[in-house]
Figure 1 (cartoon, rainbow, N blue to C red):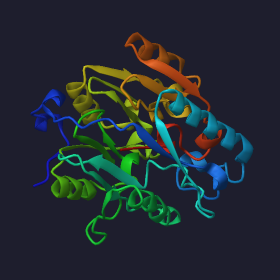
Figure 2: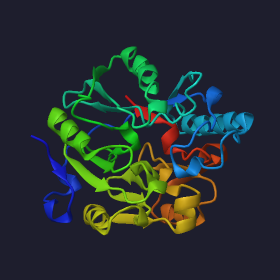
Figure 3: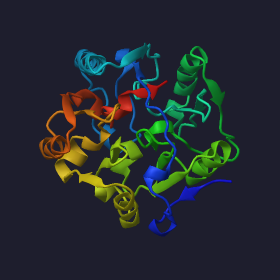
Figure 4: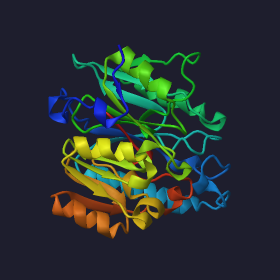
Length: 298
């Protein structure tokens, strides 16, 4: 039976009651050898076709990789594939997790855009080579599901927050919850600038999240404030222009975030987080930043 929550009235639990899931200590990153803006599938790409500085993009990617390594995480680089410029955004093609008995499992995505569908197979090969049980959704029943671009684990907890409306369908979460017995809190996204949940929601730890509130219906913000003790709200500039909420906090302490998010960073530091600013200017041209560019794995 699926467990999907889409309104505050349905929330009859606290996050403390949700079972724990160990945090991963490794991550995938796809090398940006073939990264570019070749088409428009989100508003951020508009006007940026052919405008990526590839050397600068590579430098930015390497700098981010070094930040993760300095925080004690293991980075598994995957080669990009020619003709798949968005494969670098490797949060989108899969949803990895640990089963209750500690087995590594992964659900592969059904990409919304035809231009990105072939990416999934390349990412799946890594999981196949690293001991994961592979799961697929029934494409006859589920139209779109873009992995951890939309389905985000709350740090250290066996619960998903799932965005839908642009790249993932609500029916996908019914299927995921029913198949794996995972509770899912669903959020309808309401502006195409914030087409994935990871563009407007960042899980920092089980008490704290960072959000861009205008990307949600008011009910969604109510749910978030009901479940989390600390809710940091990015302002328009930092949330929409700098993609502040596309930050990542892999260990509940270190936050990797696009450079220049002054107000958000001040709030993070007040709460004891260690902020690592990085530059993702070239990737922002394609509508992605820090979170999009990595996948945490076990």
